[in-house]
Image (cartoon, rainbow over all chains, first blue to last red; front, side, top):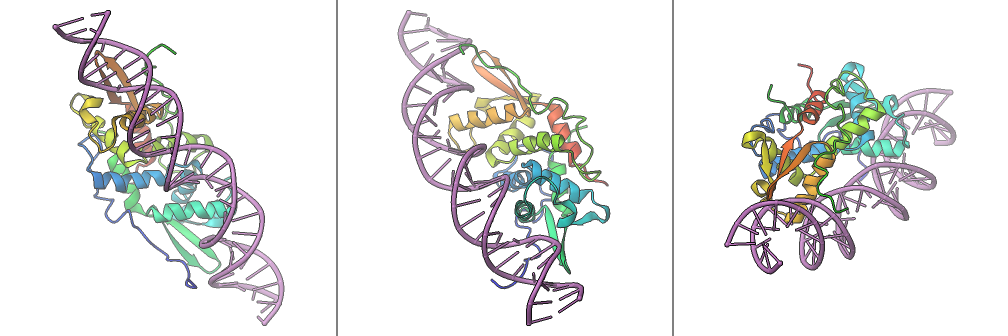
Amino acid sequence: MSKSLPVVELPVLQDAAQCCPPITAGALPVADSERMAALFKALSDPVRLRLFSRIASHPGGEACVCDIQDVGVSQPTVSHHLKKLREAGLLTSQRRGTWVYYRVEPAALAGMSQLLAVPS
Amino acid sequence: MSKSLPVVELPVLQDAAQCCPPITAGALPVADSERMAALFKALSDPVRLRLFSRIASHPGGEACVCDIQDVGVSQPTVSHHLKKLREAGLLTSQRRGTWVYYRVEPAALAGMSQLLAVPS
DNA sequence: CGTCAACATAGACGTATGTCGAAGTCCTTG
DNA sequence: CAAGGACTTCGACATACGTCTATGTTGACG
């Protein structure tokens, strides 16, 4: 356990991109519902959603924790939420020197977007 | 408390439709993050997501509980999940005779879709 | 009016979640 | 090598959640 960050781990994602047709197009199979529900669960906390939005909208497409950690909770809690988002496959992280940078995993975002796409 | 179903109640929704620009466009304000997180939370359970998809894709745009209740959990649990989805503003319900019909609230779906829209 | 079917509510129970303070890891810099 | 900053991990805690069985409520129909 002396090794450092796993760097990446997209358990849910896999191929969430071409995962699912729009939810209005047909009943979602069980397996897909579990994968997609895990993604939505990652966004189901206000603090987590704000962290995600800050990273997604950050110039350069990435942000270090120090850039986004003023969200009203303690720093360990921020770290905990970022871990959840990473484990869900919504973010990837990379350490560069002193700082750890997070960026959005485009395929995961695309998967959710596609599922919730409205007919027109 | 002898009255029947409230029929509708869109607490979160309100104007979730024109709520938020894409998450990639800027940091989400606290209030918006709370409203949108509540919507995602409603979809964060596999059973609930499947119920929602069944209603969303049902011919005529609506479905009675009897049409969709075979999702592997007990009938009260189905009822509980539908209530959660309704309270979140994702569904509306209407009793007609013996059956209760659920349909998707388009504005709520549109709000989430818009928030998760990808740049492309 | 009695009965049945469709659905909702109540209550209980185990588990998951969000939060914090304290302590640990890892890298930089003097 | 010592010190400090940037994060993460650990352990504890209160609360929320998903599920069930049992019980209500509501409307249709004989």
